[in-house]
Image 1 (spheres, rainbow, N blue to C red):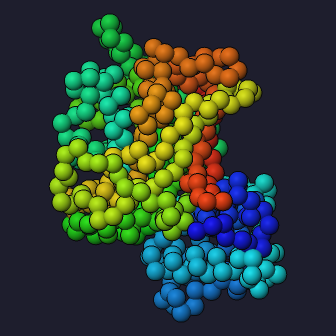
Image 2: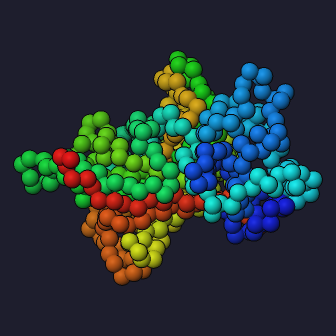
Image 3: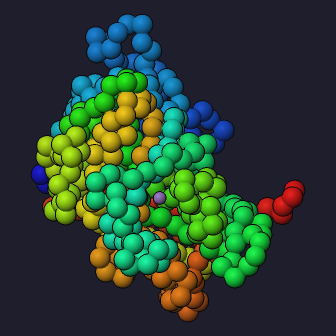
Length: 424
Ligand code: MN
């Protein structure tokens, strides 16, 4: 499918992230105004609350009369609950209304807001957050560093998409400053642990899948059903304190090392927009149990990069990889998550796990890029880094590249602030 032309001129640029083919969903405000649901088109945001209040958008006949217009709310949760049939209808309506040949341009144009005037917020109320560990290159690299090459992949890894339950309270929108965590660490040669600011603060380049429709407690879902439950995807940076993690992680997995912040990009790119970029997970090294087998391609070809900028200095690209490197798809992760009967909710967020490619410059964390801090990176400014320093700005970038257009995710960025003095 080629670039779809819109009467919003800025959407017709092949090199920009938000053409008519994309239409990602976010929540924005202007000045001191309320949070509103909006759609990115070119360099504008279409104000869905404004359109609803003006009567241009109506769900009459589409949803039960007792259900309020979901765009009167300040998150996308209400819209997501309405399910895939309504998602499809709304996206088709939007695409028709914004297409170059639409007759509605004059009615809709007053409800466009320049992106430069808007502040972005979390697009959803995050109900619960689960983070997985589904990148084989990442798991092999980290396992080699932590346990040696012979024990790199845990024995369950090729059979289970491993995950841990994270904290929804720590999920923040791109642009939010990240406070360096304090925590307990122990040097290998020390008798006693100590408490203080993490010295090995890291990123994890991930995709986040957003669960749109719920599953019932006690009822597993198939991988195909899980795929239908997913509303869309965001970029996700699972900030990690490696020194805290190394001391605390056995036997129950990460706890405080990953509980201080997780950043997501503000625009939810819908599964519908990513449809042309579906691709299969890699060849299985061991057959998966039937409940985890995919009925079709459920991963996506999404180009990913990370840049690092010391305070007040230019940015350097430190890694370049692709979401198609994952061993498990989000649909497989979601099916596994519900396999015990665990209820999944509208607004649940699933982190993919760190996305590393096979090459050294395709690694999705500083832990891997600098091999545990032993091989510092040199930035274009001439400075070197092993882990993140205060004032550094880390930004994830992502886009699916089509023929003459792209499906961009925008940015997922965060700047590190010093750790609080403790005890405060
Ligand atoms: Mn992670």
